[in-house]
Length: 140
Image 1 (cartoon, helix red, strand yellow):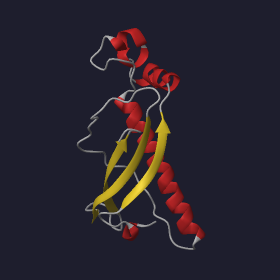
Image 2 (cartoon, one colour):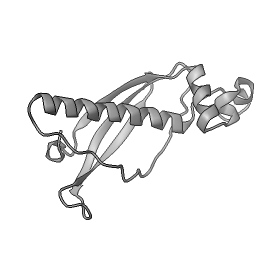
Image 3 (cartoon, rainbow, N blue to C red):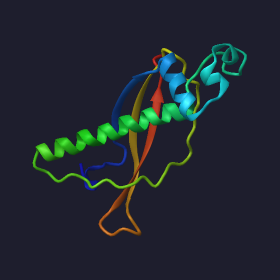
């Protein structure tokens, strides 16, 4: 998939991920050691009411699924004899929100929507694609 293939308004499913107690704790111990991510008793007494995943954990899962989706697009393009995009570094993200906590046993289904694209002002021949990524749990 190359820059020209991205269509503003197009949605792309990224996949789903089920969060487990063990994984939530492992990530939190390494990257976000808040009591409500590590200790079930402390989590019960927190505003979340129970152990929950770090928002950074949720975001990293989405980024992994997004990366694998781009790798599939790349492989599909090469298999069809088409050019594939030379992906570069992400310029970052805006307006990151975690609207609900993710609890053990939750399965979050992620998707992305292309909301904008433009040629790069600083790198001739490159373009920037802006996506809105969302994650929805098994209850909608």
